Image (cartoon, rainbow, N blue to C red; front, top):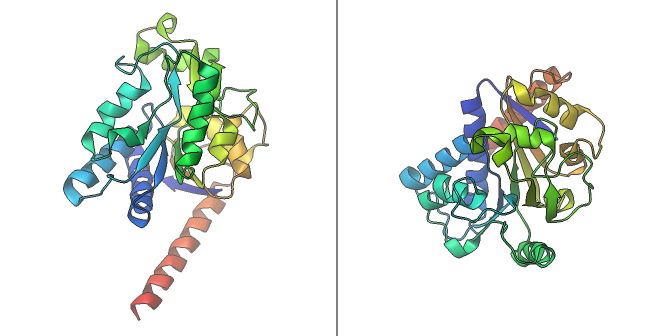
Length: 267
């Protein structure tokens, strides 16, 4: 697990956007796993800017979102399909048929979830999965206690998640109680995972994810088992990490090696 700590939330968001942009430049037909919520907003703004001002091309990119609320149509202002259209898709040249968000109004959820898994597989698997994290350490809507081998399915939301999301709906009583979500196992199948966390309210979850035991009670901790994870944090989200000095040291050495390699390439 590579842990990268930036001075501000803005710098952390730009770093995450840079990693995604480089993936697209290296692999124009990249398959991206995307997240919603307030955390990735700066990332999406920067990707839109790079498309608009620098020509970053999304025409061959395929996307799969992590989750969607059960019961909400894609036109609902709080649906994740609506969120993605408003904050990212309409600002890019991504093809609509290449963007995938679970259907919160599927008539047969078992069949729909199986189909979503099959679509990911048929696309070649996810190259880079962007993740946020809940205050209780969950990723996507894999609430505490979720199987670490789980696949896309319907999950009942925990009380803490409902409270966290109430601000978007105007009250806890308005928040849907269920969601369609990629499973932890689905996420771990991605070739690379990018976990972005900002703010002091995420510090405990980040500490438990990065330095705690692997446990279904903190589903993000399963990322410790993944072969390629980048955790990008601001100072506030990193504030409870016991091995902070070591993470900074690793990044300094990494940067020195990259500079040396670039210098040799020029020569």
